[in-house]
Length: 71
Image 1 (spheres, rainbow, N blue to C red):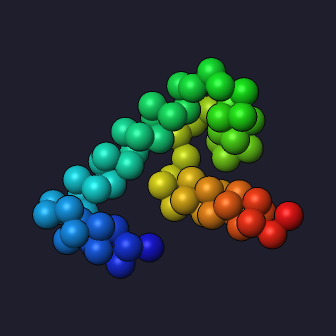
Image 2: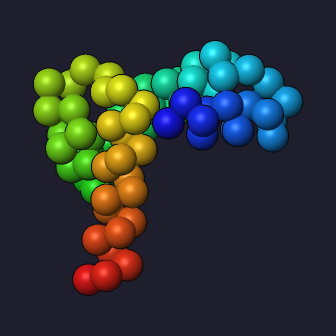
């Protein structure tokens, strides 16, 4: 996963730290959504309501995309 953050940082002309900070910010903002599907997603990813690790969010998004592609 760190290779991915490194690649994103390189392409974006920034650092891994900044990439992770931006992703954490995006996760925090997305967790505030009142859209029903988003709320369901976040209850699955973070049932305790705490901000989940970036890697867990990415894994869950990938699983959802994979599920939609093949079902």
